[in-house]
Length: 118
Image (cartoon, rainbow, N blue to C red; front, side, top):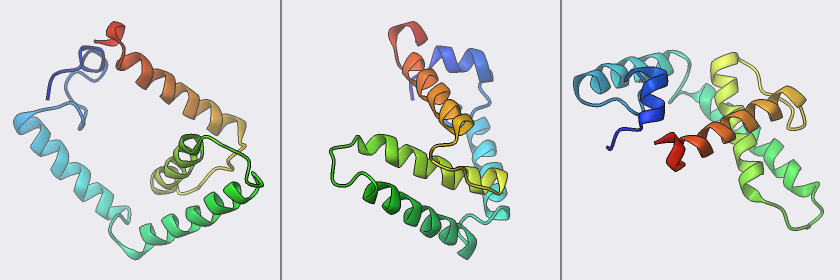
């Protein structure tokens, strides 16, 4: 992978997504072990995904067949599965703090993939 200068300045090569070589292998091993300890690959993770799927379907149903951006719906659902894993709780799709966090992450990713972030 080509290095991402912006991200390297922030995480100094320690991020799983941007590291390489032996550091990447160590981080990957640690991450997989930690995620398994939190329930990844077990019944609990499957339950979180199924629960979030129900919220996602309900959210789609509330649009009453109007055109919507599925990316916004999916990002909230995937983020909530991650929040369930990391924080032990999900957030309502209209929670102000949750939406603000998603916006910050979106802006960061947009900047990191721009010429200025390289």
